[in-house]
Image (cartoon, rainbow, N blue to C red):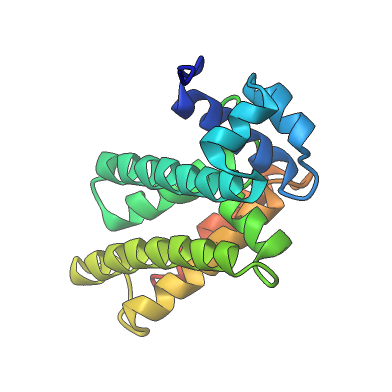
Length: 192
């Protein structure tokens, strides 16, 4: 007779995601995962197959989490400019009790050039972010907030690049004031 699981899969996946987010894939050992997740090594293998599969599921979880956070921020905004500013603020300020930066950006830097699965997941997440930004820039251009000097897609690519840089810098000792200045300039460029 098979034993029933003695843990909630979503809860332990969330714990693994946070550990990978904070430490990265290479630095996170199986022992670290077992300890942080509060499960036995056998349960980790039975539920998630191996460390790499667990990491990919954690990346998916992070992507879903961030998409929901971005959408919630955007819904609060009354203009496209305000929506983009709220996205920058979310990236800069982070959330209480979460690691700094972005797990997708961290994973892309650490692994994408040598792990096709990670490259596919990060590329997909980045494409979704760029599309969301394209939609906001198009809205801002229609409403006269942003210049039409450049195509919305080009501006969204620029914004995504700026956001990616801010995500990396958020993991360093860079001040939030500096990151907000970068956000301000990025928004100003949309109007030129």
